[in-house]
Length: 74
Image (cartoon, rainbow, N blue to C red; front, top):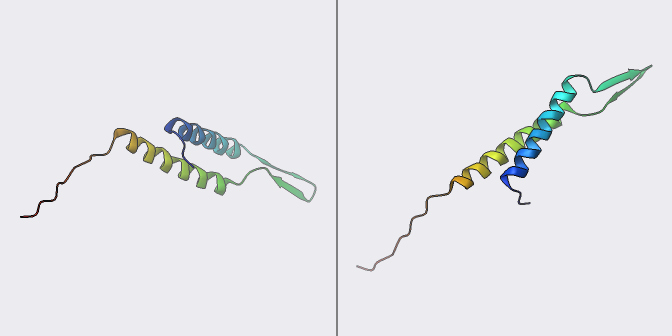
């Protein structure tokens, strides 16, 4: 899927906010049952993914250096 740099930054910000929310306590226990709303390891994987995507898109935005070569038969 192709997304823009701005979209990738929004996703990264959302996952960073999710990590912060989970760190404040997103699980609770009622009797012998425990409910966990989110997986911190999955959130961290997504943060890594979106950081890489932002890096790639930012590098592409700066532009690539293109060289042209003309083959010659000597």
